[in-house]
Length: 295
Image 1 (cartoon, rainbow, N blue to C red):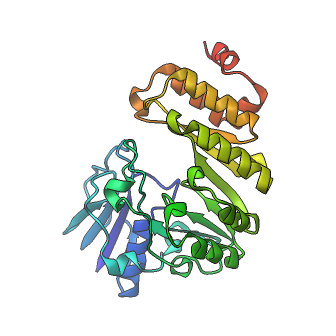
Image 2 (tube, helix red, strand yellow):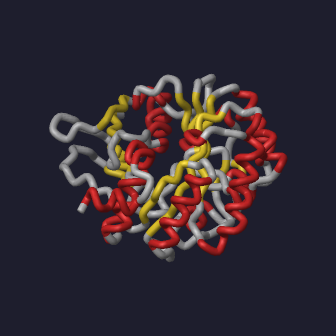
């Protein structure tokens, strides 16, 4: 078989589903490549899209069958178990020293701005061991939505420690669920980066308390501790600014995320431009001064 793959979102971040499909078909002796619209002829083409806002791939492809999947299309089309459980083909993206994968799936929080609970269930559960997607890579990028809500969290944190790899919790650890036993594991782990989130105003007291406690206990540097700040979803711009200033005061890097960015007001988009450009954020201490420069 000739199998074609299309990463609709682009190649800035590797598509895990496509890497698993590539490994599955290559193990069966199939020819697998990035689909070529003008020159390729395929038995099947897999077209994957993660983000709903990404324009679809509409260029004509010569294929007997085209299968579209990913959350950018719908929440129902999932990989078969024999594909989901396979070791990814990192060579598809030329990746050598970094592993990508999920140890857990699902989240009990069911936040209205997030699709995880809909897609993966309202319980965080272990879905793999580290060795299912890591093989002595120097760095591990975890994609888990809420690892700390999982009953097996300590066992999984121990696997990360034992790997001796640099760990990046890309999607965030739930700071509301931070405990002393988790902190002790993190202190002996090789941390490349930890992401948290401060989304809802009603959670502010607990989040602030735990952020301060975490920083005091771990002493992790500011560049290793990033906090996602959700904007344009049930928060005022004053609260958005408050979170940004407070996180900087607490020695965390804020990172502004915009819900429905295409329809977000200009001041929110300016805020993201200022905060997420670390040179601008460090040299221009107030949003108001940065906004004046843009005017």
